[in-house]
Length: 232
Image 1 (tube, rainbow, N blue to C red):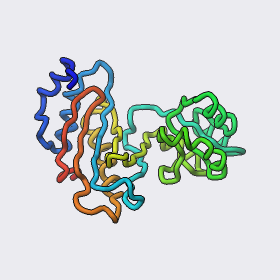
Image 2 (cartoon, rainbow, N blue to C red; image 1 turned 180 degrees about the vertical axis):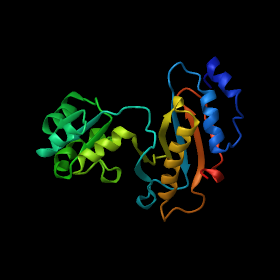
Image 3 (tube, one colour; image 1 turned 60 degrees about the vertical axis):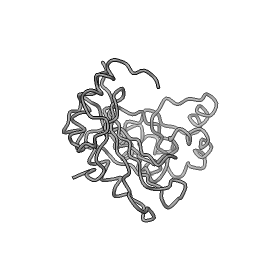
Image 4 (tube, helix red, strand yellow; image 1 turned 180 degrees about the horizontal axis):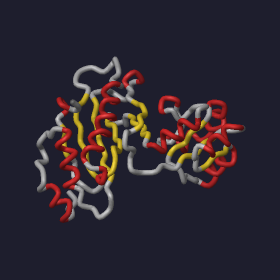
């Protein structure tokens, strides 16, 4: 087992590693256990009682966090015609089609965080499936990134829209802000995300849905949350 640094060890002394904390208390603690010199991201990991191998047990969606993530995302819009001007006016960092598809394919260029595409160009964007898919960047109607309303999509992404999705181990990982946000903003972001995850429970899910919830800062230890009281 790798030896942890002094700051990490000091952080562990501030809480009980095996205790299941109330979620508001955990969000207060996370600000004390974050010892890095930079503004750490607060992330939540939720293990669900579903089987990601089955299509009817997938959990995926997108929400706008009330206070954003603390990070400004670069958005590329793949579209044509008037939608390109609309994208530029809305604040897209990049807007185009064939030139960017070629740049991504040939130059392995990924200077963006989110890809938005209009439905009428998905036949072209589809060529990027093998490179965007593994990175979780492929536009998808469920996450609101395949749409003709590119202005709205860009506005929501810049305001703090995040996508949550189940990974192969039945866990959802998502950021809920920065340590500097303070307890109240983190509480509101956490509540918004957890309510969305609970609402997205598949009808095919059996037994306990929320198996475990852990929050942590970038360099800090994980703090366990009582799943029986995941939200008020």
